[in-house]
Length: 155
Image 1 (cartoon, one colour):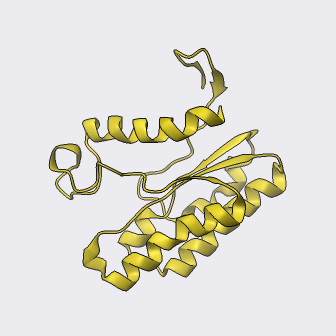
Image 2 (cartoon, helix red, strand yellow; image 1 turned 30 degrees about the horizontal axis):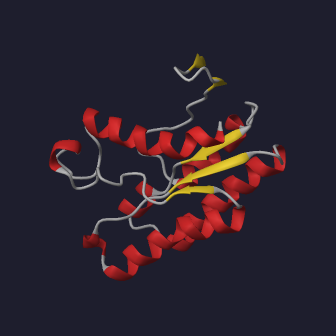
């Protein structure tokens, strides 16, 4: 869709997200996503991998393959990586290893990083659904503000 923000910035946004998607699923769908011209690629995948207990190394490799695929077709693309963290009930080793994926990928790929997409939202009762993870409508507003703070300068 074509849009123009209140700031007067024209853009074409393609939302390729799917609810419940894993990094492996995103990797499989990459060919279809690459049919669109990409100047700025926002990658927000991996959270469902973590909730399913997928090995952090597997998630990292899948995300790297997505980044590589986008850069192969669009070498000048700018990338924004949305980081995710896991609840502590998955154990400290898993939680730590999972959280390390996103800063490592951002550094390796010179991507802009949102350290934690759900900062200030995850675990906050009035901003999340009963699971304490997925945002409510008000939580989505807060997430959008987090993303916009990082995304705006890239536009």
